[in-house]
Amino acid sequence: MINYPFGKLELGEGLALTLNGMPLKGEPRLLRDLKPVLRNPAFVNDQNSGKVLYMMYRSVVADPMHSETFRMHSVRFDLTVMDYCLLDREPNKTLGHIHPDAMPGLSYPELYQVLNGRAVYLLQRLQRGSAQVSDFLVVEAGPGDAVLIPPNYGHVTVNVGGCPLVMANLVSNRFSSDYGPYKELRGASYYLLENGELEPNPNYPAPPKPTRSDAKYPVSKDIYTDFICCPKSYSFLNDPTRIGARYCKGQ
Ligand SMILES: [Fe+2]
Image 1 (cartoon, protein in one colour):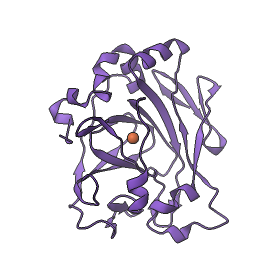
Image 2 (cartoon, protein in one colour; image 1 turned 30 degrees about the vertical axis):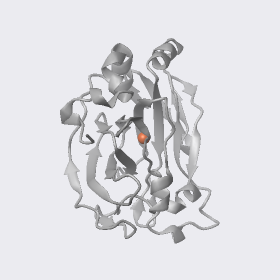
Image 3 (cartoon, helix red, strand yellow; image 1 turned 180 degrees about the horizontal axis):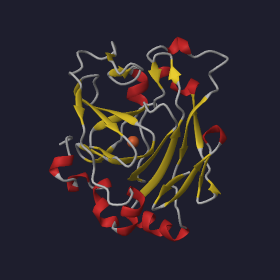
Image 4 (cartoon, protein in one colour; image 1 turned 90 degrees about the vertical axis):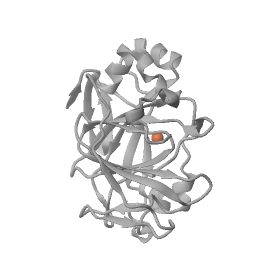
């Protein structure tokens, strides 16, 4: 049982999740879906390709009364549960994606919070229309930590905690994520390996040295409760110009 002010989460078989006793409807991501972004795609075979690596629970509300607040502010709250396992030498990770522009030159940001386990977020700023990465950030987060994905950064989450990772995110509901660049370039510009090493992905020309960052976004209770209490302070999710300078590396 995972207790946060917004509700009680219970993890079941097959990465199933209940919130306050209600089963949530999720969408699975399978090992075969990740084949294009793996360091070693040959790891995927007929026996393991149907394995569920993570479940995505989108547009979750803890109380139906909150639906209107989310709708009015064009924001969505999602939960993700990631199994802990190895994909050859890489710990389980997400496919990776970028967001479209919210306004010319600035893409939609996103706010994540780890609820259980440990995650490493691999963030990269990719020059438009090329494989040139101008910044690569590595942010490790534990229970309660919130991490802001600044505008113009693509992101991959890696489960490094040795147990299922449960994380939440707040994001604009005005767009769909773009997985294309990560599939075309076979993942992020570095692969995080089980021993903590970051191995350059040869499909990127000269990626910059990774920068480790411990920047966390301030949270009062949890990102859900904070949003419901004061949705206006999350207007930056649809208007990236409202992100405070110290959190915005993308401009
Ligand atoms: Fe995202």
